[in-house]
Amino acid sequence: MTIIYMLLAISVFVALIFFTLFIFSVKKGQYDDTYTPSVRMLFEDELVKDDTSKKTDTSKETITNPKK
Image 1 (cartoon, one colour):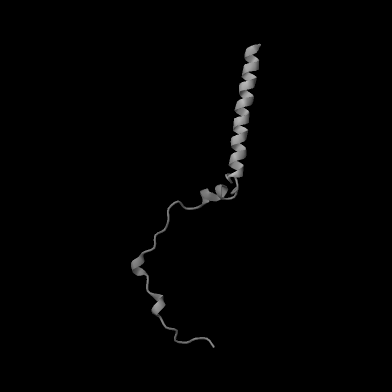
Image 2 (tube, helix red, strand yellow):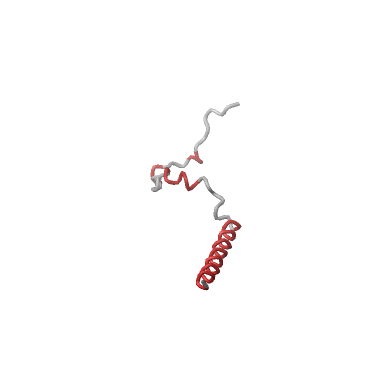
């Protein structure tokens, strides 16, 4: 019978540790973003890299017909 009391005390102790860690993670903001993980699988994993040699410098272009 003593083993049941000891196992009960150990299980309550472990449950309190897990509950404390859960409260700590909620306060740190671990569960704030609930939307992004559900749609993350829909996004592409690879980033598309732009070819920098094809880009032109648009800052030097002049406007020939400005709107008045």
